[in-house]
Image (tube, rainbow, N blue to C red; front, side, top):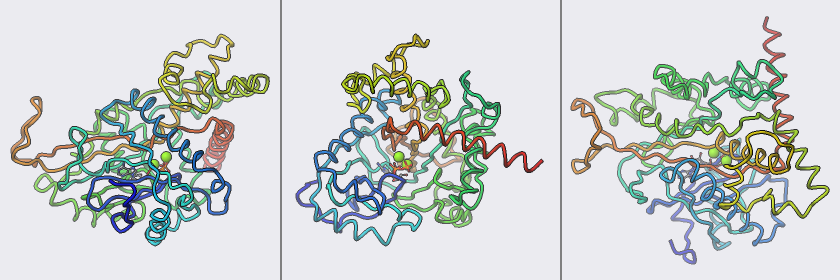
Length: 405
Ligand code: ATP
Ligand code: MG
Ligand code: MG
């Protein structure tokens, strides 16, 4: 890709989340991930190009130096920070506008800095770090947190019994974020029990929200936009799974990765973290220069990972303990918000089988690649917001459950 010869006609809208918009190249297996900001908030537009580039570089560094060693080299593709011609970015923004879902249009794509992350297109099969062009089916899952908090700081009993995702559903429905309740429960997906995992995938299919998407040859064919039209999906999938005609194949290979994902760095829960955040805040007020030594806002390098890994297990009252726990919590927040992409392609004659793979001649064979994406660092400043949100969710859940009895 030659950055000085970019043509918006080579790129098309691919998808977006809350923070970024993604476009894919029509020939090369590449995507560009550009940041977005609130339409009414021109503040970001005033940041200098250097600041914007630093921000993008921070995301790449966090992926490369913190999340990749933790989640596995094979799965995390950190990409590279690029500076695109402003003309190209402006044209691109106009081109993609009509493709964007209305619900996401409260934010606009950054057309001021030209900064972006360039990544491999993970909806295509990747082998030996090379993406291949071949018929592919990609299943994207945003699993969210798969365990109940075990911290002694947890003050509400209900948090030990009902998972955060399920409680959050009640809150999101009440706030009009979604129209229908998702029956998906991350505890099922992470249970390791085949039947429960199957049910989790079934519930994701029923009501995908932003936790489930399917791409066929890099094109989105199933997401919350389609209002869960399962019949249409089954038509699309038939050629892949016929004659076995089941969807289960997709999640079997995911099991191993999902296990890899269980990090459990959030050992204190937000209720244990918030007081430590306040300890850090108080310390920084007294010693503002310490902010950079403690790496509160990065840089996200090996040193940062050391702080995450080597945090004392017991609270010795030190600032190092508080900062270590806050860093760990932020890494856990990133992991809880990531997506897992599982890409399948029918095996060709020349594809060799892995030695321990079972051969069932009656079933079609697939080769697969697995990646983990959307691993941005979560800002330190978000912790007070997380603390408030947590009590809102729990209190709302308790009230809505009580009113039903
Ligand atoms: P969230 O709101 O979940 O935090 P986000 O704004 O951080 O999302 P991403 O999740 O990184 O954005 O990207 C949005 C979507 O674009 C993803 O859900 C995925 O479908 C697609 N996408 C992102 N990166 C890639 C990639 N490297 N290859 C293919 N598709 C991608
Ligand atoms: Mg995402
Ligand atoms: Mg994200």
